[in-house]
Length: 67
Image 1 (cartoon, rainbow, N blue to C red):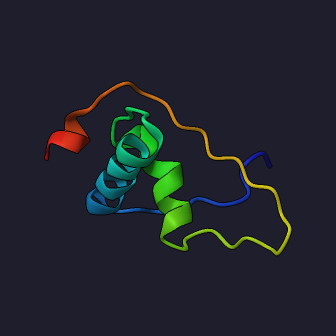
Image 2: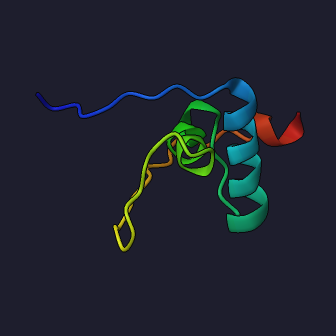
Image 3: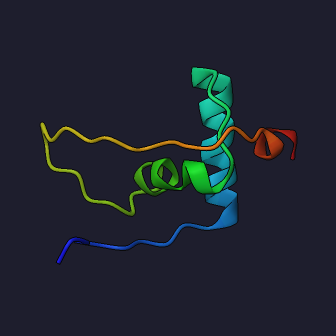
């Protein structure tokens, strides 16, 4: 009763999110650390108008940026 929804994202979507974090925000995140942002950026999670959203980003890997 603590999880509302689970969504899947691909490695490519996580890689793109990690690259976006690095180049746009200056944050280094590994692929799994960028998964929540990947889900948001690819429309896997419905967001209502005026709804506040928080995506937790973790990890300090920059491997996704190098590929």
